Length: 339
Image (cartoon, rainbow, N blue to C red; front, top):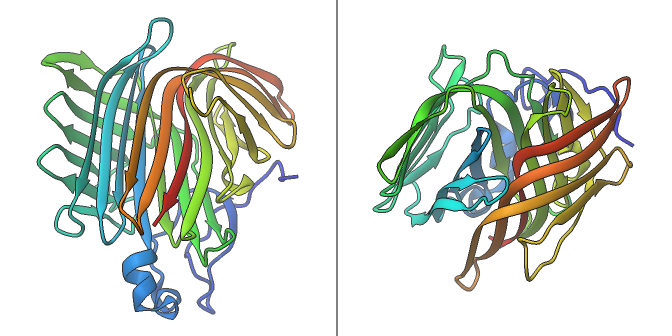
């Protein structure tokens, strides 16, 4: 069972012997500077197997915005959506685009200050960056249907989860999850402006050498407990497993067991049931909109479902008792990739 406490993140990704500092941590990832470790993987792994991606979400009481930028080295992909959540919720805008690597997409090696991710194509221009010396990430997204201009500030948010892992079939994966960042800004939907002041944001930065065929299920939400305390969750089944499973409550993070997701695969808009294998969480997820993609290019393929909706249920948190959630906005995901 995971410990109820995690150590602080290391100052460097590699130890003095050039080996990754394996483990899960509280605090930001150091820069992803792999040096001799990357050279040992070989030229082919660096140019075809190493992947980088960023996912960002912004939640208001009724709207969830989601954005992703994925740098596959030999291809690039991005999407942006806005969904209304709760009773009568629906997808308001949903844009997905393939792009040209290197000249049309980049996800850098700095998850914190110096973060620089961007994607440009005829369908979308997306930027997620954090200038050096700044506490805030900037999100700018421009598509014909939807434009977003926002900052997500690390000040006032809980410490992130960082993990340096070696899942089965992979020499290295690193990930950082940030949640409940105060948001300022606005978005324009079909020409009408909506303000984001008072919203909260989250981020998933991931990089490494995933297995040739990778599958996972994921749950993520940003919100409050029934009694009004800030509450967020990152939960995964498969791939990196329980080291990246955590609930943030009232400014503190608490590890969870690995997730167990049950849903109707032919109708992912039916309710989902989600538990953890340590019994600490029991949740339902009620979708109201769906972002989905399927691409099969022979050696490269993906099947991706990401419904948007609300979470209900409870967490049993050490020293805090049972914490209830009822209507927190978030996403669930079922993904298979051959890359």
